[in-house]
Length: 422
Image 1: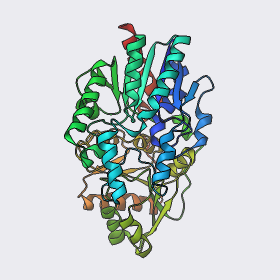
Image 2 (image 1 turned 180 degrees about the vertical axis):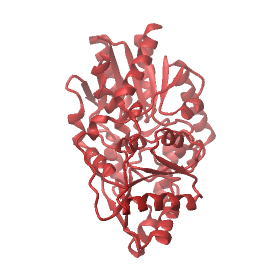
Image 3 (image 1 turned 45 degrees about the horizontal axis):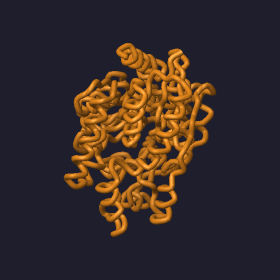
Image 4 (image 1 turned 90 degrees about the horizontal axis):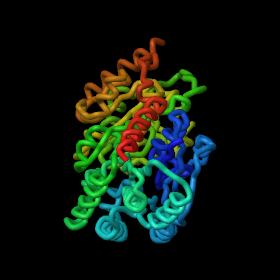
């Protein structure tokens, strides 16, 4: 039976969106007659932990954990009150002098990212495993994109086929575009990105737009998908309120104010509640909430399964694509779970973006422009009227092509393709 070795910095018990892609794929790995081993850190610099994800790992998946992350303790010593940056550096731009100093050091002296000090431990562990057992493919997944340096080193030493998996862009990721490292730093990022994509046997990414923006190389798209099994046993229960929910982090380029203002001006007397789950709201928004004639709730981090339950038990889900350069290929992990929940989606973004095309193809909702508040209002009013009249229904379109159960066979095709060329 063929075997793959996955190098992943974010892996359960780490929680959040970063772990979902490979957790879902590995949960179906047996269906394509492959075996898998994962190399992951003991205690990474993770923003959140979700131990409920551990039982979702199939028993046959071998997980090798290594490396104590001293950077975690150092960060907490320097900035005990500030959360650990994870793909979001923009908040430090307007912070204190220490924040801005840390940002400059991170952008210009720590390249490609803060998690690279795990690489030595990961490389030692992977080499020992490859000496003891035969593998057909090595897969490195990023962010953190420093993980791809481990994949490249392993491929050079062992001559095993190597796949570099990009869950997000590298040089064109929004926080590097917004914070602007020095020219030399940007040049190093670009060099590393070209080196990885050009030397990997295959580079995978989550959207066609990201694939197109990456440097030249053998590239392909593999969507994140959603696991159909995760929704088994979750039943929609209607209540006396129309529930609009946003689930996940709010990051730079996701402006909540226009949407909240629309609800206040047009639906203040409606039985509507807005809930944000798993994020800290921007200060200006948080200060407004107690004074608004609208029920707005914030809920701290939930387990993944509870988050899925909230998705199903909503009347509308809100998705905001970051209003930033190179955003046409932003397809968040939660988009697929939103679709899997069958709850109508209001997506605010460029109507020509890739997320909009997926939403339209699977009849999952509507994507409207950042300034199309009239369109937002009509969509909400239509869904609300159906709910009031008892005609509210979930999406009945067949979304199974986006499921992990289908995507795993796409992965199998790619793995067999590169193995056949060896």
